[in-house]
Length: 105
Image (cartoon, rainbow, N blue to C red; front, side, top):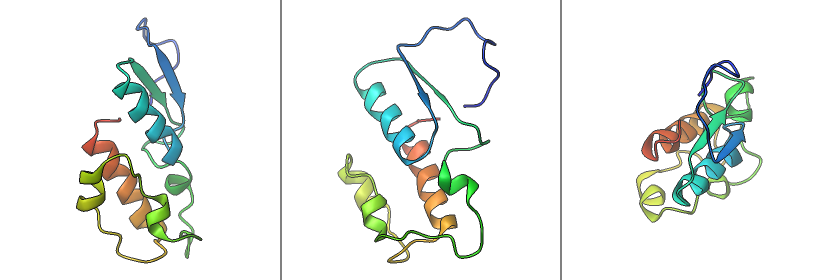
């Protein structure tokens, strides 16, 4: 997902800045509309806030399922939140799982 700007002459219908919770969802929606999409992320992996904030005790302040995507029944059945208020490592793992499952990288 990360490469220098201007390093390619490819054209895209849309670009998405950031590959956090909302960026991944936006990529998913645009691809499903049949658009060619390029995502840009400052980090070396997906996750946004959940990639960068790795301090001890970082976790959801809302119930885990609220952060879960609802666009796929299969995804909801496959992923099992381990904690009621998920920690940063589990959240980052979930976002990577989603990115891989739906080929969003």
